[in-house]
Each structure stands twice: as C-alpha cells, then as structure tokens.
Length: 210
Image 1 (spheres, rainbow, N blue to C red):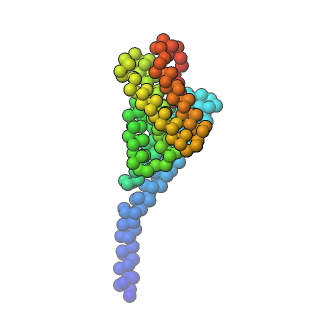
Image 2 (image 1 turned 90 degrees about the vertical axis):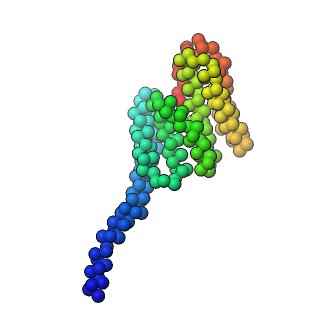
Image 3 (image 1 turned 30 degrees about the vertical axis):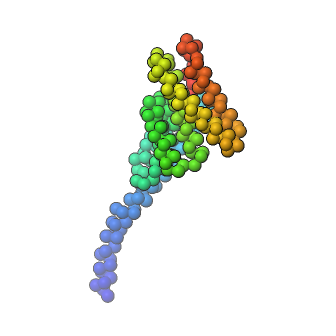
C-alpha cells in the first residue's frame, strides 16, 4: 500500500504538467483573449464617447489602445474559432479606421465580411461589417479624389460603397427596420453625391469622419 501511495504521489506532478501543457494552456489562452477583448471593447466605447464630447483628436489615443488590445486577443485566440476570429478582426479594423490606418483596414474588410458570412454570423454582425466596409470605401474614394486619381481608379470604389449601402437598406427594409433602412439610404445618397461632386467643390469641404 505504501508503494502504491508513493507511486501515485510521484505521478501527481506529471498529471499537473499534462494539464498545464494541454487543456491548461487552452484555458490560459481563452482567458487572455477574453481579457484583451473586453479591454478593446471598453476602450472603443470610451473613444466614441470622447469623440462626441471632446472631438476626434482626443479620442485617437483610446482608439490606439483598442487596436492594441484586439491585436493581443487575435494573437492568443486558439485555432478553430472562426466566428470569433472574424469578429475580432472587424473590431480591430474599426479602431484602425479612426487612427489613420485606412489602407490597412480597407485591405482587410472585404475578407472579414466574407469570413463572417461563411461562419454564420447573425444579421446584426453582418450589417455592422457591411456598414464598416462601405464607410471605408466611401472615405477611401474621398481621399483618392483629393489625391487627383482618375475616375477609373476611384469610381469602382464608390460604386462598391453604393452597392453595400443599397444592400444594407434592402436588408433592413425586408426586416421591417424602418429607421435603420433610412440610415442606410442617407448613406447611399451621400455616396451618390460624392460620385457626382465637382473636385473643386470637394476640395472646399472638410474630410468626413469615418
């Protein structure tokens, strides 16, 4: 009996190590992802509130913190969490749009929307991703025009924005969301105006917020 007890006692560290390097590591990773995600969402909400109260410049450091938090969450996210992965990438892209990283965010958003659709995201998340993409396309068109790019460069971008705004409006109308559909349609009208606007008129306007 003493030999059996001694053997079991010696095996205990092996069991602890197996947990630590197996399921324990997954649990640690999940905890880090959860903490980083919560921090990112909190900083993003604080940034929005600060932007409303004190202006966008005051909110930029908070958006930068949000981006770093979402980066950390993505680095520790275990494999196989495709829906969570796409959602975190979307939140990071939103933060990037507010800290002058439009090209980075714009390059990711098409794939993010596609991945969310493949992962079976709900309508609210898909609408959020589509609206973020359309806004990035709209803002990118504005910058391309100010940079003097020819129509064949910026027109496909604003056309894609128009299509996304229109689809968002149609989806909202099909669900009976009247106010939400009106918001999408106002964005669609803004995209149409941007495409038709004379360059000299555009140059006299302040840059829109993302």
